[in-house]
Length: 469
Ligand SMILES: C=C(O[C@@H]1C=C(C(=O)O)C=C[C@H]1O)C(=O)O
Ligand SMILES: [Mg+2]
Image (tube, rainbow, N blue to C red):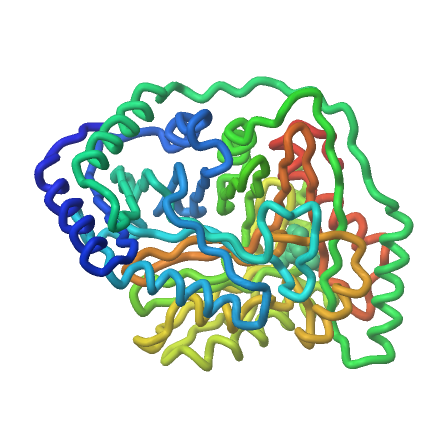
């Protein structure tokens, strides 16, 4: 991690401090340098002591972009209300207004970047379990490693105030970067014994599914996604780097993410993109309808065919396609949606899958799209408002950031958000795992229960719990 071209960026830093003094406001300074290859997980691990509770990780399924962030220079959280998506965007825009950028420019996923997410339902945020996350949590990291199509970049961010001195900052940055470099070591994963695996009232959960089904028969509600929680207790503190490492090995076709906040960590391997924005191009995914993987190729193919022809799963999927199509047509000039779903296969499960791509109007931001899409009927249900209200009143758990948008946006307006499913909240030596399923009028509680059991497997495997076979 060479600290080269120091004079080049020191000039930018001086400018930022100057600006802060003139404006009597905080000014963000950001420098991007191309660096030699570093393993992003080692980088994440190197922040274990100094930045614990202030780290994030992101990797998309194609590995076009991997980012690991350490430290927080600015945290953005807003009040829980219907305007929260716009308010986060407004704070982020405000911070960029006077920002001074130095070094490499124009590379997606480098430079000033905000990473974070929202809770599922802004109307239900008084959760003790999620008190470190609140209703929304985004932050701009102090140090960020980005691997963009194989090339490594290091971004260093600083928020300057009118009292700051550029010289002191320079020494601080150098010292901190050296410290990270000195701590880079290979990640080794040790076993952590599971003491308890607690499933909270499975029969009660099936009853709620049955109630949803009977409610659907007498109301406008067509679909509702119901989730349940599994709680694991381990002998020792869970190392998030170990969990990330296993997820990276096992869930190669998913987004791998984690977001730390104080002592807690929200982590997962989700197969489901909410939105990706690259320039004016937009991408989303309709993912709903599920079946197990087969033990061998023949059985797997048979299950795939079953899924592709199952009326309940096809309708469950179709609800998502219609809603996403409608929501995106309002912001897109071009929109492509295949007529028939195909099948996405992950390590433990297969899903009906319809990719969506389009071109959006120039003034549309990724936050506009999040506002339009969340929650899709893959996470909430249909009609959206009725489904979310039903979940709020009946589901026996605190979703927090589960099933909600999580991702990043850079200063060029590019970004990507996935929905945080196949995920867990890690707290010390305990973990809460979440899994949900789309309930329709012809759902049976037993098969929905089975489907959620399979959906726990990615996190169970990464944590070292007992898998559902
Ligand atoms: C809600 C979850 O998954 C969602 C529900 C699905 C379904 O019911 O078939 C499939 C994929 C996801 O959109 C979850 O994994 O927790
Ligand atoms: Mg389903």
